Image 1 (cartoon, rainbow, N blue to C red):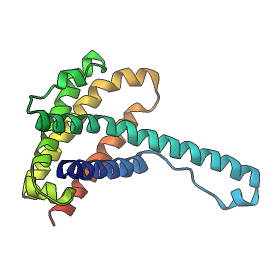
Image 2 (image 1 turned 135 degrees about the horizontal axis):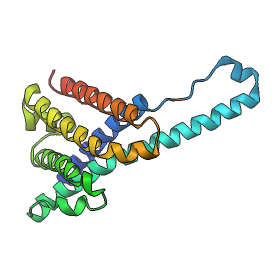
Image 3 (image 1 turned 45 degrees about the vertical axis):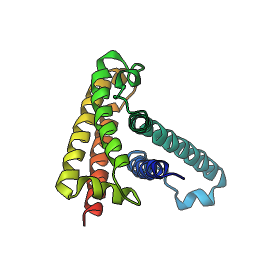
Image 4 (image 1 turned 30 degrees about the vertical axis):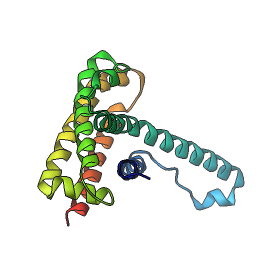
Length: 191
């Protein structure tokens, strides 16, 4: 495996772990109770709910990673082809009122990934430490990323609230948990 592919794999693996942690925090896993074992038919319902949870978690992770995968692919193409970023083509499927917010988020991610792909390191932690050099520098990136994600969520929220209940609570949980996960990773990388 060539160096660029190895770096991309490290980045993808890190993003997937973060998405899985986020999904575990945001989605409620069905709880098993002792009486479920005593009444087998209820246990069947629990297993059904558990399958729905796992399917929902997997869908959440994949949907969460979509933007990050597109940004990583764009960053790799910029390096490989020596071209400028083509973010406009990546935001066309978004509602018009959210396109600029998504474009801003993608710009931050593309620059981050491009920089990581061009630096040296054996794993994601090594890439981040090589690129950002200290906690404050990386924390500044996290702040910019967090602000861009919140701006995109503010644009998407009104349309989603029309069709789904509890959207505000879900967005709030995602935003808070995402920031906590990123900050925990930053502390781990620079301690």
